[in-house]
Length: 113
Image (cartoon, rainbow, N blue to C red; front, side, top):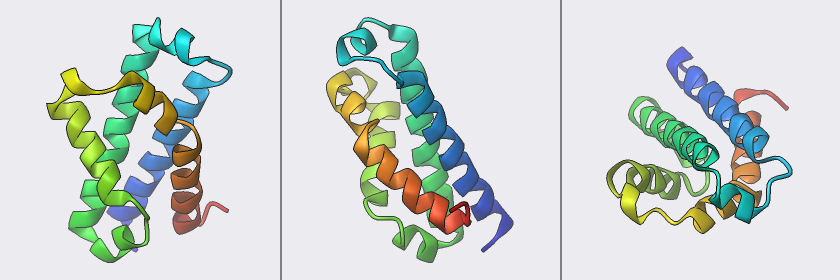
C-alpha cells in the first residue's frame, strides 16, 4: 500500500471518529436544531468522500475492497455541489450504522484491528 493511500485511510478513520464523537448521545431533533453540529458532520463526510476519491486515483484495487465506496463519493459530491438538497435526516442516519460499518472495513484495511 502506498503511503498516500495509508494516509487517506487514516483520514477516513479520523473523520469517522469525529462524526461519532460529535453525535454521541444526540437525538435527531437536537442535531436538527444545531447548525454547528450539522456543519461539522457534513465537513467530515466530505473529507471521507474526498479521501476515497484520492484512494481511487492512487490505488483503485483498494477502493474496490470498500463496499459502497462509490455511493460515499456520490454523497460527498452531493454535499459539495448540491448542498441545498442534502437531507439532514439522511445524513444523521448515515452517521449511525452505515458509518460504523465503513469505519470497521477501513480500520481493517489500515491494519488497525
